[in-house]
Length: 287
Image (cartoon, rainbow, N blue to C red; front, side, top):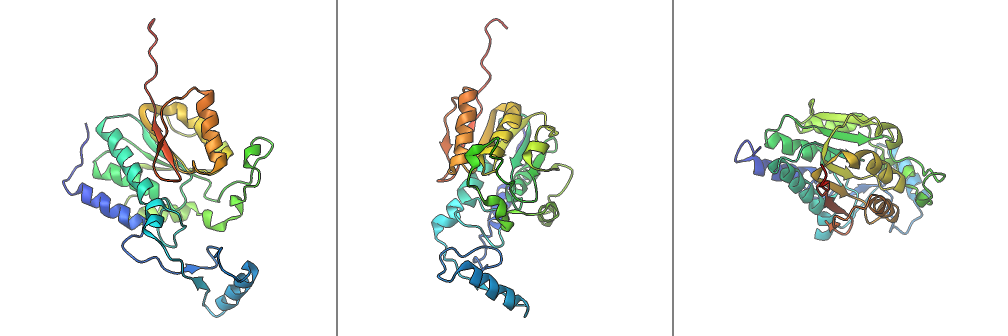
C-alpha cells in the first residue's frame, strides 16, 4: 500500500490546489479580448472595436467581475490566470478520489478527457508525486484546439451548441505542457493524447483506469469517452462527470448508464458535477 512519502505532502497538495485555483491572489480585471462581458450595456461589437483600437496603442479594454465565495467554491466563472476553472469543491473531490484509489490499491492510470489549461491533471500528477507513486500515469486527453462543431447526424442532442466558437477554450498542447513544467511535474508519467475524441480515444494507450474524469461538455464528446474508456475503469474506480448540469452531457450519461444497466448512485459534487464509483463485476456462480 502506498502512503504519502513525507508528512508535509498534505501541505504541498493544499498549496498546489490554491495555486491552481489562483486563490492566493485577487482575481484581476478580465480582458474583453478573452471573455465577453455578458452583462455590459454596450453591444459586443462596440467593445471589440474599442479594444482593437486600444491594442494599437499597446493597451486593452478590461472589465471588473465581482466574485462571491460561492463562485470560487463551485467554479462558476472562467478565470483569467488560474490553471483550472472547476472550483474548490470539484478539485477537492478529485484529490480525495485520487488518494482513495491509492490508499485502496485500485489499479489503473488517471485520465481526463477535456483538460483546458491542464489544472486537474496537474493536481493528479502532484498527488502521484506526493505519494511517491511511479507506476501510474496521468493521461491528458484533449484536441488542444477547442471543442468540435456538433455532429448532428450522429448526435442530434448537441443541436444549438456553440462552444466550438469560443477561442478561450482552445488551449494549445504547448501551453498545457508549459503549465506542467512550471510546477515541476512534466515527466514521462504524463501522457498527452491529442485529437478530437472520435479519433484519439478508440486507440488510446490505456489498459486500465482508476480515475476517469469527463469534461467534454457535449453529448458526443461524453458518450464517445464513456464508450471507449468506461470498460477500462477498474471496480472501485471513479467516474467523474464535470458537466452533468449541461443537458446534452447529462443525457449522454443517462443513456450510457441505462444501456449498460449501471445502478451505482450518482453523488453530487456541486451544482455542476457528479461522480460514481464502479461496482465490482457480478460474480458468476458457475465460474
